Image (cartoon, rainbow, N blue to C red):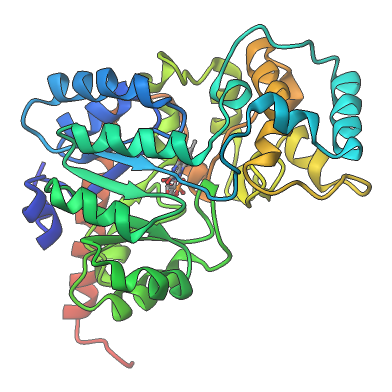
Length: 374
Ligand SMILES: Cc1cc2nc3c(=O)[nH]c(=O)nc-3n(C[C@H](O)[C@H](O)[C@H](O)COP(=O)(O)O)c2cc1C
């Protein structure tokens, strides 16, 4: 594969400026080994589980760089437990969850997962951050929540530090922190997302960021979009949804089962919706009865993050555990339309790189055709 050597890719020593966010270790490793940069999302991992996971990634990628993504939503009072927060949830919300359980005959989960066993207090985040500081991870990205103190401490350990943003306002807030890169994530993205489209946000942030490398994210699942992002001044693309359908995602802690895979393959660009029902913050997901339930008239207003998470954790765990068909869902972006079959990460990256080269060549041909303005 011919490399696409943007300055940021060269600085990192990667052949392809394709950054892949994933909660799967196997996917993260495969992205690195195929020439991109895998970014492992630690949001679901308690601090004590992180060192072994990062050591495994390092062992499997060797000297190749890899990244981690951390989310540090504020607002959970220190000293609370999941039980104490659950005991104080508004009765209207608890009753609503009961009605969902009854309607879909959702049993109580037997599994303990991130959704139903973890309360994200400041101590939890500090533990996660310390695990990153103690590790040899090369790059750290912040999904939600970022402090000057965290950036300083990561820089002191030689980490390359960046953040995901969804608006120029976020960029202004982060500008004084001295970040090494920024991910401009448009509304089309899977997961937590804003309202500004990728095509608008990327050049706007490139202009504001000056010398700071910008990566484009949100709805990207075809290399022509990566070519477009590069033409807009981005130094790479950051993808999340595309990896869900890979062979590497079929196993492990966050395995994508057959029914969810079918839904992803069937979905077109119009089959996602933004809901606050899962976390309290707007999150783009593939449409399901879960998204419809929270959008229906009479549904209560979701609670703030992370209280909503305490409310819905058991039900989300049970939907997965028992495969409650109409409720099965996953965060996914509008680029899910490019998800057409299960394939390996290496195959996917090869296709994306080929399409990127094609797109860049096409643009160069058009630009060289002398047809401007006609
Ligand atoms: C299943 C899934 C889980 C995600 N979880 C996180 C997360 O924990 N932290 C984060 O910063 N971004 C998360 N994201 C967002 C990705 O980092 C990325 O910005 C986004 O997926 C890009 O848009 P795309 O999905 O259209 O490729 C998630 C995305 C998906 C699809």
